[in-house]
Amino acid sequence: DIRMTQTPSSLSASVGDRVTITCRASQSISRYLNWYQQKLGKAPKLLISAASSMRSGVPSRFSGSGSGTEFTLTISSLQPEDFATYYCQQSFSTPLTFGGGTKVEIK
Amino acid sequence: QVQVVESGGGVVQPGRSLRLSCAASGFTFNIHAMHWVRQAPGKGLEWVAVISYVGSKTDYADSVKGRFTISRDNSKSTLYLQMNSLRAEDTAVYYCARDEYDQEGSYRLILDPWGQGTLVTVSS
Image (cartoon, rainbow over all chains, first blue to last red; front, side, top):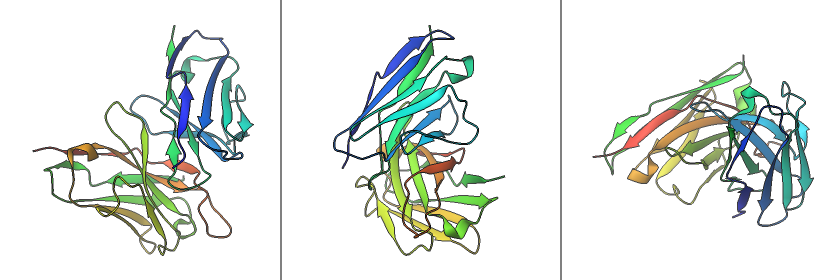
């Protein structure tokens, strides 16, 4: 199975800050990497697929990059509605696996 | 609008069975693979199972293999998860999610949208 490791597991940031979350795969997954946002008590929402392809309706302050084994999710200017937990997920092969999550909290 | 809605969760004793349902609407159900993903209280996301658009191919996480069965009824636009021999560690919110359309009928493993989830609690 492909292991996905996210860092950090949590972070505190202020509105307007630039935030970067890293996701590493235990083997090369090309660009088969997706990012999800989950707010408290809600279902996950797909933000980015194929490492950097923004989904419809996702604000442009979100961006993704990377390939192979290292990927990043960047929020260029954190907004109040962005406080949530973010998960990476590899879509290279089954079993589909997720990172452990990064909780973005208000400083 | 495109949506999936889970039902069937509840409290069940260890060793017993439960069947979850997921009703799909707003899209052509029979061209999409479908998934179940779960989330234990306060924990991260764990993929459970996937079924192909026709229902002929399935795949499972090792943690549920041999105990859970994913199935679908395309005439009813409904996905199911039959859970047998339930254990305390199966306690979680169970989400249904649509896989992105693949022209060749394979899995894309890109989940969108997700339902609101249904809580399964395994406890005596």
